[in-house]
Image 1 (cartoon, rainbow, N blue to C red):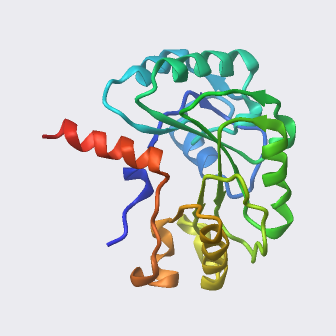
Image 2 (image 1 turned 90 degrees about the horizontal axis):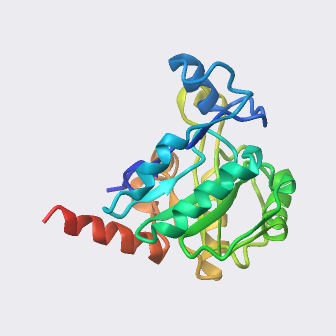
Length: 229
C-alpha cells in the first residue's frame, strides 16, 4: 500500500508568500482562501515559528511549502540556518523554481536544497541549483509533470520525487506512466532513491509504485517510531 508523502515530511511554513507566480500554485489558493497574509506576492517571515524547529522528536521538515527559497531575505535564511544547525535531530528541505536567483554556501549536514521541474524546458534548474547553492544535499521534485522531461543530469542529486497535478486542475493534465518510469530508471542507475507520490497510483497502478526515502530521512522516521513505544 502506497504512503502519503505528507506522513513522511511535515510542512513548517516559516515564510508564507511567493513572487514566482506559477498559474497552478496551490499555496497561493490556500493563502487567499484562509487569509493567511494580506498579499501572497509579498512574502512574510514568521520568526515565532522558529521555536517549532526545537522539537526533540525527530522530524523531516519541508520549510518552503508556502514559499520559494529564492524569495527569502538573507536575514530570514540566516536565522533559519542557525536553528537547523542547533537541531541535528531533524532533516530540513527547501525547494525553489528560481535557483538562478540564489547564492548560498552552507555545510549544514541536515539541510536539503532542491528544485521543482515540471517539463523538459526546466531541466536547467538542476544545473543552476548545483552551481548557485553549494551544499551537502540536493533533491529534485518532478511535479506536476506536464511533459516528458527526457534525460536529466542527476549526478550529485540525493533524492527525486515524482508526481502529477492534483485538485480541480488535474482533469486538464495528463501525466504518462512512461515519464515516471524513465525518471525512476535514470535515478536508480545512479543509486538515487525515488519517491512516487500517491497521486500517481491511478496512473501507474499500486503494484508499480516506488516510494524510497534517503537514508537520512529513514533514520528520522525510525526514531519517530521509538517515541510511540
